[in-house]
Image (cartoon, rainbow, N blue to C red; front, side):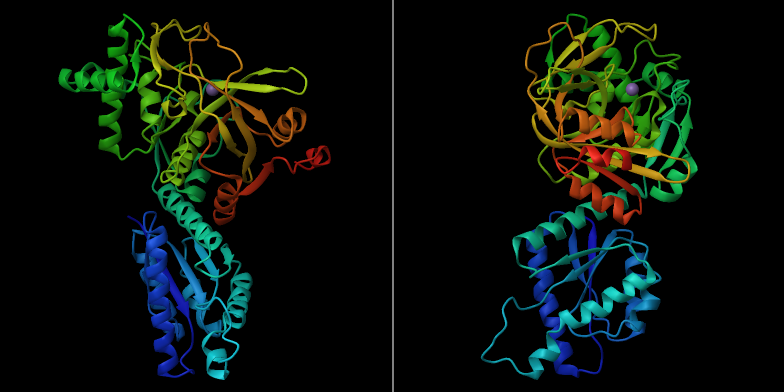
Length: 476
Ligand code: MN
């Protein structure tokens, strides 16, 4: 369980009684927040900032604790902000400025100057907001009474995004082979990815997996087959082909565990030593939160792992997808999204079928894969591109829909969605923005989550949705 430290602000001019009340209110507040969002992160109260020295000590604790994903600050009283400069300069983790009060309503009949001195977030939080602005510290402000549902929702969201950012800082992507020859958008600056998001992109030859798959212990392969048979419907007689995938997944499992891997890529142009392109193996791993990018796409692999982490406590599906083909019926346009094989099992509407079919390209044996129709509901499609001098996140609102008719000859898993506000603007905007054909689709996350991630990681964000107009397209 990660931790979010809660640091209240005050000063030592108000006297002991006032400071004791501040601490008591903050204990009550953190206990309340733990009840509400303790499943996402433990909220831990640190000593009230009464002096610059306490602020430095608090921020050192934040930075020294590997389990701490972020910080919530709140000025219960006035807290002169010069006291915060040295401490804030140490802070390199997500920051939530909670603009709230211990009291919801004003006690009109009792209010006196003691009450005014004790409860002056309206005053103190403005002083504090100024210094955050002056120091250029990226942060989120949540304003409102801390017990209100919408405020709790936003604090929870902050904790989820902070957890994802903490996770991101420790992502290692294993790339098996390089980027697909000639493809542009999957390429980019790996070094910048590491500096900005923490992703260590490390190369291995696919022989690493081929060797392990060859040597996979039969009992582990049996276990994996039993897992497949319990989760999926075996719709093929060619169980040997399925067993090949089970061996691959055993190999990936071992490799991932030994090397601390959170995400990986492969490339169908470089499968030396493998009989099949990893199909079920990749699909099943993605459903367990392992990031995946085909064709050497390390960015979408790492990004999908980070977004799956962000969504881990929510209902809904999150994972890698590729834009494929359209139904362009006027006014009822739909996109059919899929991949050669590797669509995460988490997108399945019903129990997936294990099928074995030839693959048109790659020149390998017929691979076993999971085939299913996709989940439905409101969602987002989000991608990350490298523009050389900066990264850009593009996030589009979509509606995932039931496929209008069966597609009995299509031997891959698929999802379908409607673009917003309509096909012309939604897909036009994506093209203008330079959006990739690889993305992450999620029915668990919202544009607001992605916007918070972009803000806290200082990444350019382009959003597309019902509020996008034709006039916006030339500004993408
Ligand atoms: Mn692709």
